[in-house]
Image (cartoon, rainbow, N blue to C red; front, top):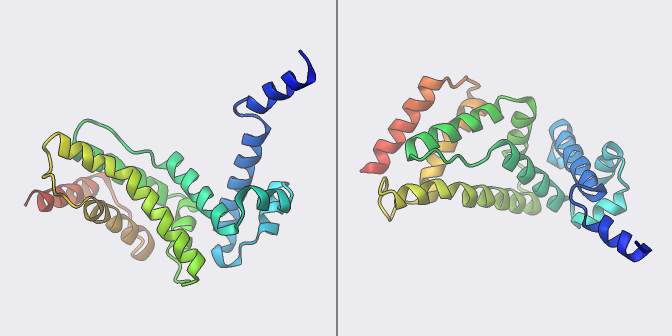
Length: 198
């Protein structure tokens, strides 16, 4: 095997050095975001935590906002996969339980608080909008499948249905700081489904 062939094989290897660096930078971003908040987060802090040079981080992500968005989306995709149980009710209960468990962790709480921060910086506001848009786009498959199964009307408002599911979870976790037990979760989903059926 000549040098060019070896280089090609190494650069194509999945899960190699590049993947490890990305994972380290994203994890360091999440931890720094939880510790410091979005308004005090810097590339140099992420570089220090991850051991990856700041210029390498800048070259790969471009802006701090892009890096924060990538970290939050990667974490939410890992921690909040979209359930596919076969029924709308069970999908919504499963998603509600995943979100509740996510918000019950120190990192999940800190990230949710960072996303809900009152900072009106245009870049952060745009980032927050892109994050929620991506999460809604992923979760709308729950509603699409329910429409295909004739569990919901074809004109169901996807975003409204998902907002009505997710908002009470954030309200309880972040504002009134009350736990959400399984019975309460199912009652909340049943109330939502009753409203969607009208």
